[in-house]
Length: 239
Image (cartoon, rainbow, N blue to C red; front, side, top):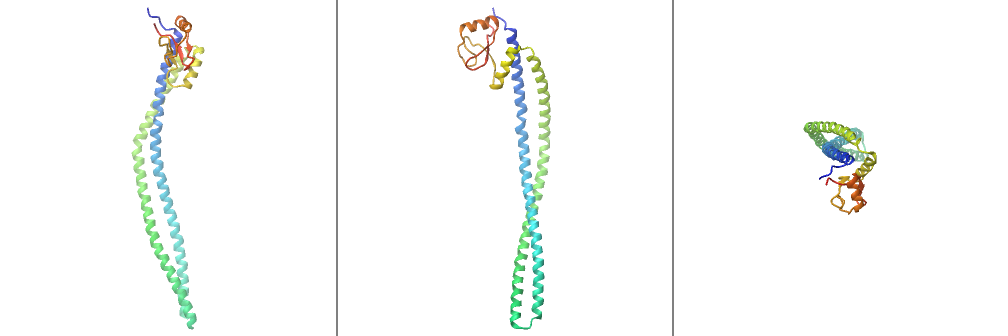
């Protein structure tokens, strides 16, 4: 005739069942993290590109202002040189003044050409910013629904976890401390089951043989033993 499990063993197995369900729920909750991180990463990458593009616009605008200031200065010098050329009388002085006028003219031509090129670069940079701003708005709109779904699922799982943890503590209150403490220590150190039935004459986890005297005592009294090899809690199953 089959013998019923000892009440302490049944309580311990009930707790292990609760912990298995709790662990599965915790894994489901943890799986939301990478999904949220993926959304955050896409947002952060685009934000970084937009920040760098805006920085490029600011840098080009600064160069443009500085170049415009130089051009104004050089135009003033050029006009002064032209005016001086008009008043010189001697050939030697005229030659020197003409050389200054020519140098100033070349500098102005180069700077004005640079200003045109800079204007093109600035226009391209501003277009890039506008494009990235549109992409950012589109991304934010596209992420609204999946983010809301993640938050909803997280809230649901958190509520279930709170209920299940309270239920787990209720079940744990029926397990003697002499079994609960080692059980909790084992679960923190190793994944999988912490409570395993004997498999014939051996540990049901690592198949290590258990001495006959210990097995007999486990069967007779419902005593729970620790496997000397793998460390799980062993009990004699119904037999």
